Image 1 (cartoon, rainbow, N blue to C red):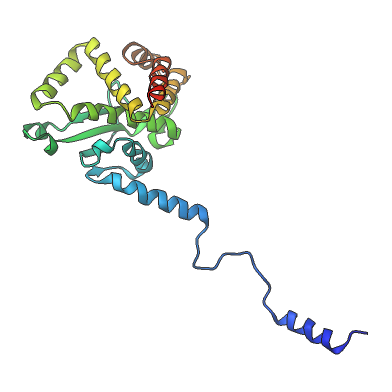
Image 2 (image 1 turned 60 degrees about the horizontal axis):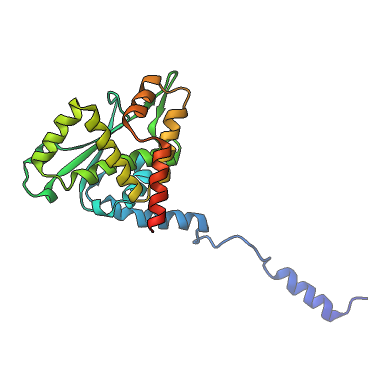
Length: 229
């Protein structure tokens, strides 16, 4: 027979609320807090930048590798199509009138879609490391531009249009800047993506092979960079 003390204890236990593992209503899961913290830490790299929402996160990650561009005015602009390219970095012509390099502004044109044989792929649907590498490469150009005089930049533009050897040197500089700023693996991912994608036009791949560093050459730069650390 159950005595009266046991009955009282059972009754009190029944009245007590059951323990729960659910977080309080005003708390947030750790994953949400981590994402919010990441967004807050990256937000400081958006100063003087105009960035489409679709590529905002990867653009801020790319910018985080270029602290020297923290206060530089850069406008990331979606373009319906960029002839012969996926992205292009340029100084804004009007800003070249300023003698002070700090007053210059730049734009990075970004193709809204990657044109494949059978579809148009929204640029934000590229793998993250590939998009990061593309953006990082263009920021490598701007890192090169910021230390040039206005006259030098105008001459740069003319040579880029008419000299393939000059284009190669400019692209090597952009890739080298990307590697030295910690984006070597992303640059390799972008090169591999382009050269091994079976639905990208062959003439575009030929251009990349002819004018840009190969994945192997980028890897060599990464190795050297690692050895020097």
